[in-house]
Length: 148
Image (tube, rainbow, N blue to C red; front, side):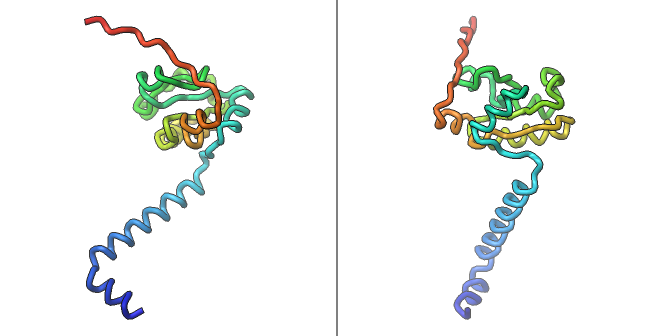
């Protein structure tokens, strides 16, 4: 115990940084645990969408074109945060599963959708990567060539 106290007093900046990291980690875990937005595994997400829901892909149009879940709507995070969600109005009370590459951006989009009044918002746990790892199909769209 004496060595621990000696280390803390001699390296107070490093010790303070460790305390900050620990507090942030605990806050993140608590936020996810008590959040009303639940993560869904790919198979669970398919069930929710098949019961009248929709996938909302929050990635940019270029990433969406490279590969996306068939039938998903592409509305990027900036538009969702700005409240541009008219395309989703008929899904106010239906399940909405937000999707991004790994699930981090989708959580922010789900929070914004929930604040906008959508009642059943979920996040695809692991994002499109988890979807592909579960051997579920991915659709690709043809990009139009830009004219110079």
